[in-house]
Amino acid sequence: MGVNTSVISGNVGANAEVRGGGEVLSFRLAHNERWTDRDGTARERVTWLTCALFGEARVRALAPRITKGARLTVCGALRGNTYEVDGVKHEGLQLIVDGIELPPLDRDDARDDDARDNPAQDAPRDQRAQGHRAARGGRR
Image 1 (cartoon, helix red, strand yellow):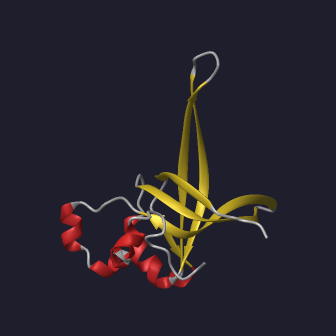
Image 2 (cartoon, rainbow, N blue to C red):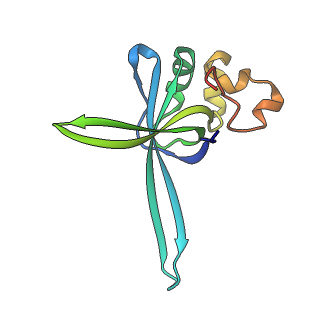
């Protein structure tokens, strides 16, 4: 038996898109790596990852919070997929999100949001402290 779990932190590239009749939320996450090479030159690499989150209630609650530039930590399973564009086959890698850690709400936003719009707030206190498991939904 193998383990397929990844935890990635990064910035959302564009507002999340609701698809599949409201049951799928997809977004792209940019993970930045910075290092200094042997010559002392600063280097940077950006890796883009497509993420998909399933479940109508989770999609409804999280879509307004996953916006361009938001810093997120997501965990889930990597899945390869193939698709065709203009007759050309492409292969990609997608993260099927099981858990997500959202940035804190601004005080003004927190007053406006209903508690059910933030699944992390519904989780038991000790589960929220575990970070990426705070918004874990029905998929396991």
